Length: 110
Image (tube, rainbow, N blue to C red):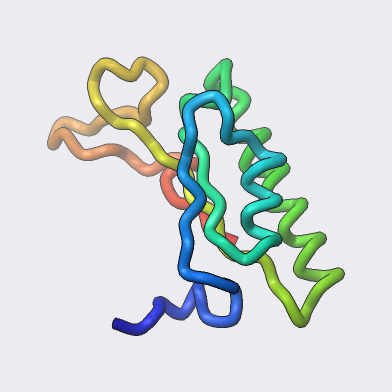
């Protein structure tokens, strides 16, 4: 199986950093990505929920700065573990079909 184009030239090893509850924060995600593995965090770690947009902007900005400073070693992408179970009050809104509606945090890659 071949790698998706977004990963070409960005991974040092084929690893995804585990999105660990409480532990995974922007600093860890950026460190994972700049080390060449996919960084990840659970969206629930950003509390209050409004902090998620700030985290996403920070991660994107820091990875863009890394890429500009290290064009020969671009950062790996990152992922957000979005829990959409109805018990999660900060989950994205659901449409009448039961599918999640698009939000700013629905898909994150560099």
